[in-house]
Every structure is written in structure tokens, then in C-alpha cells.
Length: 320
Ligand SMILES: Cc1cc2nc3c(=O)[nH]c(=O)nc-3n(C[C@H](O)[C@H](O)[C@H](O)COP(=O)(O)OP(=O)(O)OC[C@H]3O[C@@H](n4cnc5c(N)ncnc54)[C@H](O)[C@@H]3O)c2cc1C
Image (cartoon, rainbow, N blue to C red; front, side, top):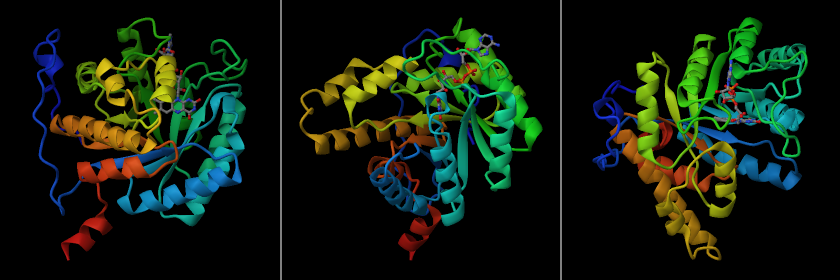
């Protein structure tokens, strides 16, 4: 849980650039570490599936609060998402969370999918509006479908008492009328029944801290979990960032300049950058992190280690 409500810099002096925060020393072995969760996308090939299952096997000992599986644009991965979640439920002790979007789906279909999840003992849904497939311009709701994620949250809450997480945008969702309208929207999603917001990825801790302050001031009291993207492919990341409104600071581009042919060095830099971001956030009270793994374990695991999320089993073994 975050404990420094109202303590962030924005509430002190909103227009002043952030003073470099003091980074806390790494957690000691045996300390209770932060809570972490991992996001995967559903594999489409046998090789990708094998890689995902290796990844799941490697992250499991960290003891994540949950692992989530995305839902492809336009619902394109519906069956892959469903099958991956069922296999996680069946074959591991992890708590799976199903991403579910409104795109191209009627309310009745959404309810049917949700009922299938509930019946399969999948009790956590990441409820999203979703984006249309790449070749379709702009989001248009299904004629009988939900238009906004807040409506989806309300609908899901009527299907069953799911745990519901929603998306939040520290740098404002690209389609929002204004930052305030976007914050009002987040509040609607929470008021409709969501109990956690997971942010879009970002690279500037100040952006998150100011957003968290504004959310708290707006009466949003649920955890606002920073979404962390460990960067390995800088060029691909800038394309994602352009689409979702994440700004890429010049210093980050500089870190990756000249590393185009050196994937190993990129991984080391990516892990170091993300770990530093997490540790700055920790020093401001953040104690939950959601990792966009892109189905790779290595970087997220390195970061977890650096921020003290080692998992109870690992910590206990090291204590002996
Ligand atoms: C953690 C996380 C996980 C994600 N997982 C997936 C995934 O699995 N599959 C996928 O396709 N996409 C995923 N996305 C992307 C997400 O679907 C897109 O960013 C989408 O454009 C917005 O989704 P939302 O749930 O925030 O929508 P909403 O909360 O509905 O907001 C969308 C836009 O509409 C505006 N808005 C909302 N309500 C109103 C209103 N009443 N009047 C006017 N404007 C309004 C908002 O301000 C915002 O600009 C994820 C994003 C995050 C952060």
C-alpha cells in the first residue's frame, strides 16, 4: 500500500521541476519486498508458447500478486487469451488476471466471456475499452456493446464479484478531452467497482508522482500501480510510446544510442534504467509494480531482485 498520500512534490509546489529524490538503499534480504505482477501476451505459435511457459516458470518463484494475459486489439486473440489463462490456472499456483476489452463485442458476448472466466475460477479481470485493430481508424463501439471501460466495469460487477483492475494514464490518454476529463474518467471506473489502476508505461518518475497526487486529490484512493516497461528494443518501444502518449525523454534515447547491434548491452541498460525508476518510485512510497514483460523473464526478474521483490521462498532460502 502507498502511505505517502499528499506527500508528493505536486502537492507541494505544482509547477516546480522535481528535485532529484533520494534513492533508498536496496532492501535487505528478509525484508518484506514490494508486491509485483507480470503481464504476458498470448502466444500464437508453438515456439512462442514454449517461451512463455519458460518465462512463467521463471517468474513464479518471485510470488507475484497476479499474472495477467492481454487481449489482442479488436479481440483478435480471444481464444489464445482464454486458453493461456486456463492453463495458468490449471498448471500453476499463480493467480491469473484476464484482460478483457469492449472492442467489436456485444454486451451479451462480454458477459458470456466473463461467465466463462468465473466458471474457470478466474476471478480477476483487467477491464479495458481496448483499441481497434491497426487497420481500423478510431474506436467505434459495437452497436450493442460497451462504449467506455467504466461501463464495462459496471457490467462485469453485475456478472459476478470479480476483482477488477483498470488502466490509468499518467501522461493522459491520447483521446481525452483534457487531463481533468481523463482523471474524471478514472474516477468513474473506480466508482463503478474497480479496485486497482495500472498505469501505462512511463519513464519519468515525476510524471507518475504528480499523477498520483492529482488522483489522490480527486478522491481516488485505490492503488495506482506503476506499469514498468523494461526496454530492450528502443525503436520498437518508441512506436508503442507514440501510440499511447508516453513521452520518451532525450536522456533515454542517449542511453540506447549506438547499441543497435548489441542486444546484450541493451538488456543491461534496459534493466538498469527500469530498476532506477522503480527505486525512485519506492523512495516515494510506491510498493506495487506491474511489469510489461513482453513474455521475457530476464529483465523483469533482475529488476525485481534490485527492488527487493525476491519472493518469500527465495528470501527464506537465503536466510538459512
Ligand atoms: C495496464 C494496461 C493494460 C492494457 N491491456 C490491453 C489489452 O489487453 N488489450 C488492448 O486492446 N488494449 C490494452 N490496453 C490499451 C487500452 O485498451 C487503450 O489504451 C485504450 O485506448 C483505452 O482503454 P481504457 O480502458 O483506458 O478506456 P476508457 O477508460 O474507456 O478511456 C478511453 C478514452 O475515452 C475517454 N472517455 C472515457 N469515458 C468517457 C466519457 N464518458 N466521455 C468522454 N470521454 C470518455 C477517456 O478519457 C479516454 O480518452 C491496456 C492499457 C493499459 C494501461
